[in-house]
Structures are given as structure tokens and as C-alpha cells.
Image 1 (spheres, rainbow, N blue to C red):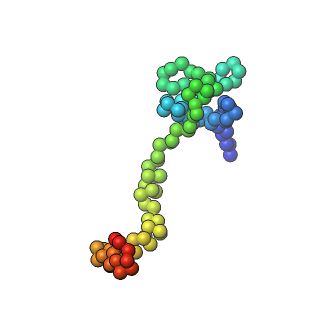
Image 2: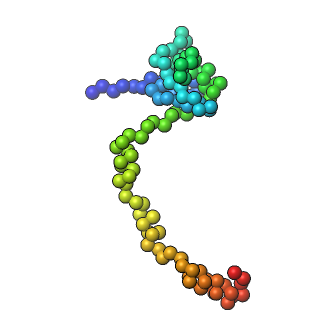
Length: 116
């Protein structure tokens, strides 16, 4: 069995998984070009712009956050088929307040000398 180790790079003391798409503070998506510069720093690119060093991207546009991956069809179906939370079912069994119940609470407060 073979396992693949994801390519990583370091910038500002943080380790970045280069297989992910990263979003900067301005909302731009950065991906690894698959190349490194002479010093071994990963080159990142957004759209058709010129590739930039990961350290430069982090310092000028950081912090970087991993972009959320798309939800698969199986995950969407699993979310729909998930049973309702037991706590929500317990709350559904509680009696719902009615105007009559509210009126009784107000009457009790008036008997005790409190204003409603």
C-alpha cells in the first residue's frame, strides 16, 4: 500500500498544505503552481497573475485560510437523512403557552401585588 504525503511549505513559521486552495484577507484564492523558486519557496498564483512566493503572499495579503471544499452529493444526502436531535424532540413535547396560560400568570402576579 502506498501513501502520498501532501506537499507542504513554511511561511512566517506556519506550515501550509500546498494541495489546498488558500484564501487571503481580501478574498482572493491562491493555489500552488507546482513549482518552487531557487530558495525552495513555493510559488503561489491567483487567477492568471504572475506567481508569487508564498512568504510574500502571506506577508502582504495574509493571514491565509484554507478554502472550504465543495460538499459532495453523499454528504448532502447524509445531512438531509440525519435524524432530528433528541433535545429538539423533547422540546416539541412540552406544552406550548396559550393566551389563557399567560392570563393566569398575569393574574397571579396581580394577586401578589406586582404589576404586570
